[in-house]
Length: 214
Image (tube, rainbow, N blue to C red; front, side, top):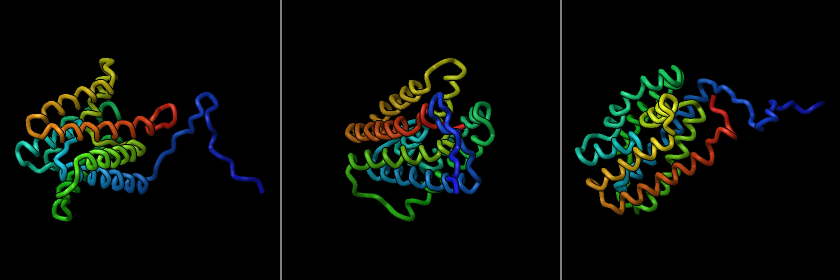
């Protein structure tokens, strides 16, 4: 009895062909990714840290005004959905909207379920970066995201030639500078460490020369 044949691999770049996920697989991935990201946000909130992009902006709004993080995150993401629909298609947009809505719900009810009140900002920044990076990676693998600045960065890269990574980094730098007005500098530093950890995870594991997402 012969062994089952494996999917063909492109000899030119040694990249396995992409596979479509089932609806169940996508739903499970959205839940797993969002729960990991939600836990990372709980760690950051407990330590007084923040993230980059729209998530970081939502943290600034939360710290400065007391508005619920989940509500701020959801509303701030709304202007970016038309970019996703225009550039990345209806499937990506629907799954991204679902991920953002689910994350808003998770972060909204998390304080009623558990509270993280005593955690060193260094540990929160590093572990939060690991969880956030892995959760975002799960979403990317299933053609979804948390919307926001990431969508805008891709749009600007395609329409004006601005490198998406530079756009994302510029926004994160502005958020970190703004955070100095509402957060302790040491906590801003550990927030930056968390962002570095997040981006290292994504850069090592989400590479177009190794994986296909479409």
